[in-house]
Length: 230
Length: 230
DNA sequence: CAGTGGCAATAGTAATGCTATCATTCTGGC
DNA sequence: GCCAGAATGATAGCATTACTATTGCCACTG
Image 1: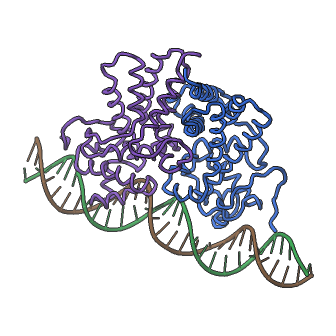
Image 2: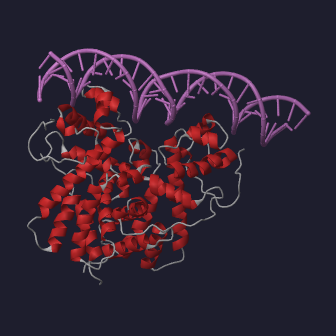
Image 3: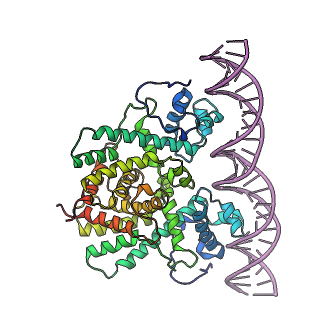
């Protein structure tokens, strides 16, 4: 039987993302861990399985045994992030009963600058976050969205948006666009950070790693938007 | 001297986008016009200059005489859209003095469903809009953003956001994030339409071509967000 | 010790993005 | 109506890409 290589909390993704579960071997962990680093360094387009195999001292064919395509690896990484974020949201809001406060904490978690976290021993979450910011929209702005959606590859993202949208609906039951507002916030939090870094004239937030203005901008936007009619 | 092939209002883009101005020849117009159609049909990744050349009855080498890469062609198309949108915004808000009404009209123009417009005789604006919705983020989520930004290839987008942000600042001078709010609205308007079509559980807006809920959602969001403190 | 799973090694495919060269056709100015 | 130069076509080629197929070794396990 295959065995997990490390201990501790582990996020297991649906087998649809991979051909062979990368958490069950050193090679698999290296593919994921180094894959994140390389996509961050060179960008998704320039990243290839050939380069990855070379870097981790294996062969292209072996990488293809874990992920059937480069695009599936990216899907896996993004789903890993969403699943991790769902977990963080749950932690952040557990034991809080006031609906507004629950929503505030959720938005805080969703839009805050990411720090190192040791949930995945072989992954630096800050790097994963940079990959999500720069590459996540490429997983759905893609000709195969429909098929991949049917296969359930976006479920974690949809669950997450739904969960936060439900918090909004508790606070403001008559607000008509809770899901659209949440997906707008999520995508905007990524985009504003990307703009701050690369196209600063498209934002007012600044680019320091510890910047909270994105969080402030979006939290304020949500609470004002869902407020009952003036 | 080269001459324009058609008459009427014409949006001329900065020569940095192309090697040879595609508006100065039938071939150039075909490259742009059919390029838009093919990117819409098959998606940017599957689109190639080889296929385009075949479709318009020319050769790959001739296409490369107009655009030095497929990526530059996409940049050209997106800039064409932004420039066209700037023009539409100007038309929509001229002769209106009330700042709130100017802002409302601008947001309306920016987020409304696109109809056929005969500004470009060889381009169906609805198709160009679909290309913008599905592909525009690929022009900046790209390893060469920094260089391309330095070359001024995003100027029309930045000018547009700045112009609308200035309208916000007139209405609400103390609001701290006008530019971020505008870029959020612009990107969200594209994304919500894309989600409505492909990932409907990530939005509440519907996908009919004549749907106004995106406009309503975003206009409402902006006016509530910039309202003076309650 | 036989068999299984995991991996490396090698080779190959069709397609991609892009360049180079040279011949042909078209155009405008005299 | 001719000629220079521009625009285009035709063809070839390049390195790289994403991905597949096959084979055989080695370690562990039953």
